[in-house]
Length: 129
Image (cartoon, rainbow, N blue to C red):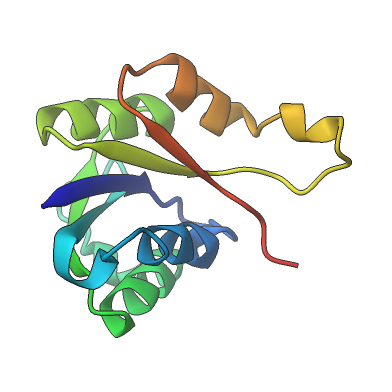
């Protein structure tokens, strides 16, 4: 099974876009599982109470993708990379920005840190219009 990790922040407006990118992977419903990672300093936090996490999980679960959630402590980008490596994920999903053709070379700061901070493949999801 192909394992994708995605970080979802508390105000992540791209949560659905990331989830849709995972759903769009080949044979996602029977060969992909997704772990939604949420960074928080509260280890008792139920991630299913975070609205942006719920959005991502709803997209994934409605499509039939196996899901799990993890709450991790620390800097969000470092935490996502560390979680992906600890979980032996196959890929990390991040969100990009919609820009001009030349501007597409630029990424959000967190996405760029993830790409530079891991040896894992990174799926960059586009922004919904």
